[in-house]
Amino acid sequence: MPQTEPAAGHPHRRRILAALCAALLVMSVSVMAVTIALPPIALELRATTTQLQWITEAMVLALAALLIPMGAAADRYGRRRVLLAGLAVFATASLLAAITRTPGELIAARALMGVGNAMITPSTLSIVRGVFPRSGLPKALAVWGAVASLGVVLGPLTGGLLVEHFGWRSIFLVNAAALLPAAVGVSLVVPASRGRGRTTPDLLGIVLISLGFVALIHTIVEAPRRSGLTTLGTAIVALALLAGFAVHQRRAAHPLLDLRMVAARTFWPAAVAAATGFFTLMGVLFLITQHYQDVRGHSPAAAALLMLPVAAGQLGVAPLIPRLIARYGVRTTAAAGLLGLTLGLAVIHAGLPAEGDWPPVIGLALVAAGNGATVNAASTAMMASAAPDRAGSAAAVNETAFKLGGSIGVAVLGSVVTAHLIAGLAPHRDLIPPGVRAFAAESVTGALHTAHRLGEADGARLAGAARDAFAGGFAQATLLAAGLAVATAALITLALREPYPITGKDKS
Image (cartoon, rainbow, N blue to C red; front, side, top):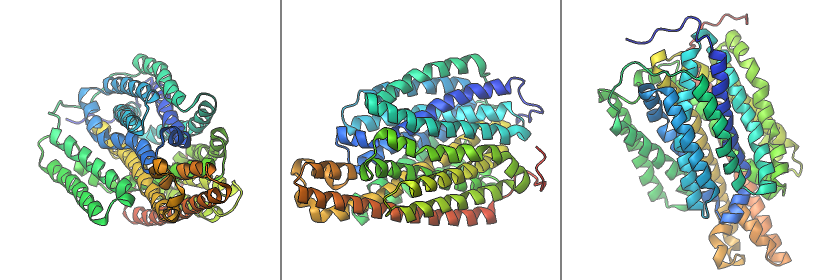
């Protein structure tokens, strides 16, 4: 029998939300701090753009692949228990990341961080769904979104200062230390909860969805360096695995994912909108970090300051979301967010050829504000449409949309730039010493670092080619993301069904 909807929510729900938000803040800071460290990591570990994509992707990919299984595990074994275990795994992985010596080792440590994050995220969101009544969810999720936005502020700032004064490894050491008080707060405040029933884990479903996501991201990231036939083959494998997962879920006695919940028109269009928002935000952040530090020559701390508009945009829009939803509904709020995001991409695209930093700064603020409106409205739709005893699974799909969208964004937009770099630097390969050819021929960081070691004329040729190739790829990436955002805005306008009645007047 499904759990009944709580009439007034848990009596200590605000205290519980505060403890969960503390854990969320640490996670958000850790994710965003690494983005500012990518150029120093590339320089020290001799990482190519593709390896930087995997350093970024490994955590997000493991997270996306395991969110649905971990959401089901949280419902089955207890949400607080899974949350605390996830904090321990994430802390251990952070310590391992701090002592890595090769790109491969760092990629592996980041993947383990993703496993821990996959245990944390659906547990926290499902707990929020369980302690707040349905009517209070928009405001609770707005607070959740605001804290995530605060992590967007503190992540680059913290990362920039740590990288500049203590090196990029210090980011992971600070992550591990910060998780201890967060774990103490969760253990003292958060109540134990789980979904009804203790079904047998769907092991085949876990294998199919995990391998399917891995194959999909691998196909996208490696596409610029592989033949068309190889790329097509891995794409077919990825789609076959994901299709097999969907078929298996329809037949399984105890499915990992409730496909009826996902198929609802209050749910799947919102998931698409959330994925598109994070596709754009994470893809642009991956590229803008390299633009600021490699192309524009800013220090990590200065680049972090130039990323403050991301947080300003998301923090600025977060308090408005409950009122916008009450007045206009989640469909209009999400569609408007996607169009605002598109405007931000247009500003970045127009400003890339210019020397100043203001166009990317303004564009980032608009992208972040649009993303904030889109994902908060989408989260409200998805979580409100789920029954309380399926909150873990709904939270997992919600976060899978975010993380998989962001992962695909980094993969696709990063691959667009990689393809431009490979093509743009190919005529200048004779200038690159054989020992650093892979690093310098596929990475703007490597090409510029190598150019500084060459003679004045050769160095200028190589550096100019690298900057032009990166800028051309970045510009094409913004057009691709803008087209996707406009298409998604049209889709949800036509397809998304409102989970709340629209009053036409905000009474909050």
